[in-house]
Image 1 (cartoon, helix red, strand yellow):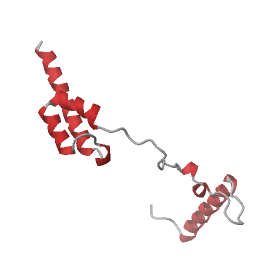
Image 2: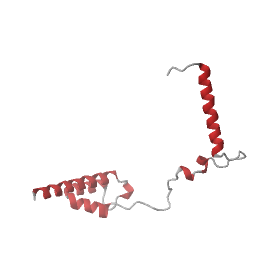
Image 3: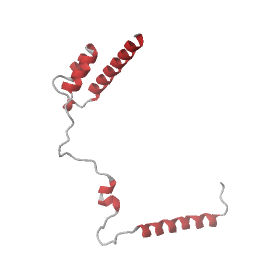
Image 4: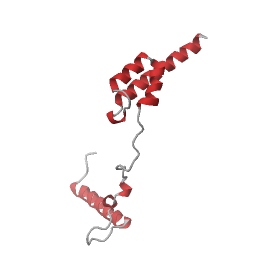
Length: 118
């Protein structure tokens, strides 16, 4: 029976700590009903009940409205190297050929300098 109470106490402490940290790091515009300090005090004075009240009444839902969304690089035409002005779009083969030429030039420069000191 002691083990059960120990698990319950540890779970209550962990829940309270999580609620306090969540309340302390929540942006001001997402806190409802009371001020942040009052919510933290409530969670600490009434450990489990205060945490439940915080999660049910104190937190406002995140705004999922038409605000700016994250755009990944695959959504950005400048990142993908889309058509710009008069230059033709580059293909993967052109890019591979340019990379291969650069590597060959570096290799030949190293050979011309003599043995490397690796």
